[in-house]
Image 1 (cartoon, rainbow, N blue to C red):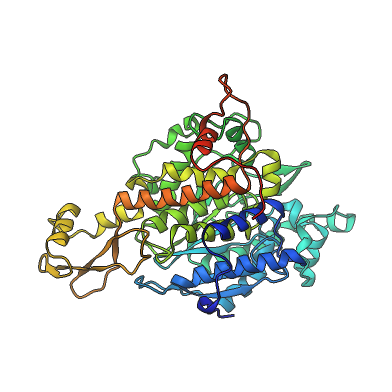
Image 2 (cartoon, one colour):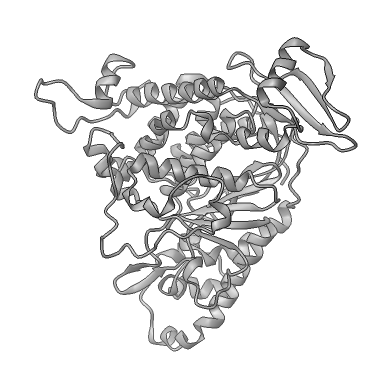
Length: 518
């Protein structure tokens, strides 16, 4: 189903649209099959997302209107095919074949949350999913019927007790996993995914003595051996109650790696770590800020490599830690001027909150009730990734600079001879022109380094100060809207009676109010 979203009117604009989204997000759990008044609100949110995607991309839509593919994925799943601007790269994925592979493979992963492409960068698909389903989930009655009878009941994840008849089939579980995981592998290969980043702190999730979920890294048959597997354990949503209880302070907050259920060590191929200058052996001593920063640097390094391979990020269910890193990746690449180049700060904020978090099933209502504020952490954390060391442009600059020229010298040439084409050598030329990006948000120019006789990718010279200001605009907009709608709760007053830390900033800056109607 091809989409032409450019004619769709915005459902809202600016602060009011974001506030309406946050209120809906905090009041009701999204499910694709929900009807009634909630459906109309979700439709407005979806329409706005499609309009924002359509600003910069040609895309197709995989229909999931009644949750027939996955009950807690968007009703309109977007397949980005090509950047409509300067990016010469184009996805080779065809929506019809992708939809067929999804229908065949969705049983392979927890809760049917299949591998789904969500970001297109340099022609590479950055994907998200849940982890692999384990024996207990696959052998639920509805799951069994789905696989062998062609059923389409999405409620299979709520596995019933295993009958004696089903128990007799346990010896055939190898064939079952071959079938289901084989389809999952075909989907990964079709999306050209090579790197799989697993955020689980366990090898398998166990409930009531059953292995409810598994993961690629412990697949006994080594079915995923051809992929580059990275085990980068990251605390689950429960840990973020400690973040909230410390007045939303992540500095100095260290996860307890000695808990009984934590059995997945950090494991990253040396080839992917050499350029990062990070001592990975110290990961258990990192606080939440350091850990999140270093994992994000790793992901950016992977997607910025010279090969054409895509990336999959997943945790257990794929709706807490997974959107955290997907959202940070989207915002970081946007701040560099590399994706969603025409979107203003308020628009990219709306898109990532709505699509990456709300429509992909993050359970904000439940998380807020438990104080597990991983959603808030994501956007408040933007203050920690504003520097150039998190920029994907930085490494592109290093790769594309012609021999004998530094970036500073090129910028001097740009200032001295604005708008012209200056010969740098017999092998390279420098072209400069005004950016077609979002007016009013920031100003930069494009510098395109072109090897003679070939067309190279444009390198967008967004300065470090531009990156910082763009991310700070997003963070400020989020904090202001969050405080007016959802609000933060002080844990305990300081001895002076004042609210501490981040909450005090709210009072001084944007104001701290509870939920309100618009």
